[in-house]
Length: 180
Image (cartoon, rainbow, N blue to C red; front, side, top):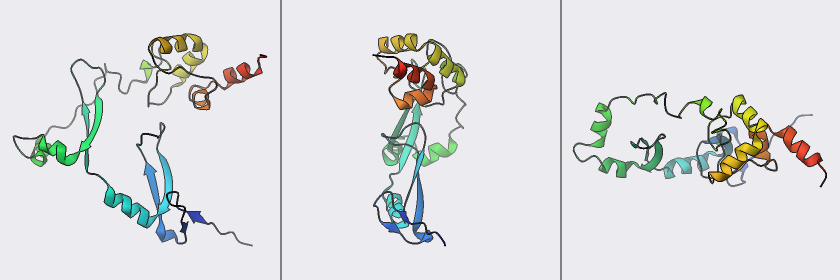
């Protein structure tokens, strides 16, 4: 006895009858997306429609003098091009120097920034290090007091995402086991 796999488009629910009609779509950024990319399957025609509807954009990091972190903005490529008034943007980009690596003193790329009691548990897109997990587990009350005082979201033992992200399964189970 054999098996047959039936695939449906995640976008439209339509049956995908041929392998050459199957497209893999990886979503890297979306307002409703969590911390990591996800993938879906769709008909090749649906992927082609996405390709045709795609916007031409410029993704730019802005480093302001009084700010530690850059601001990332996405804007229409034509609008960005119009900002270059001295010479065409294409020429400007060809002659521009390569970007410098982030400064070591900045928070960008420094996993140890969140591995301090002063910053552990702050929302961020980077991976959670074991040092940060340990600080949050050992000092959850203190971390939540600081986060609340700063007007940030607190870490909840009732939120499965928080429990997994910070390795709080033991604390969550202990809380559930307590009477009353």
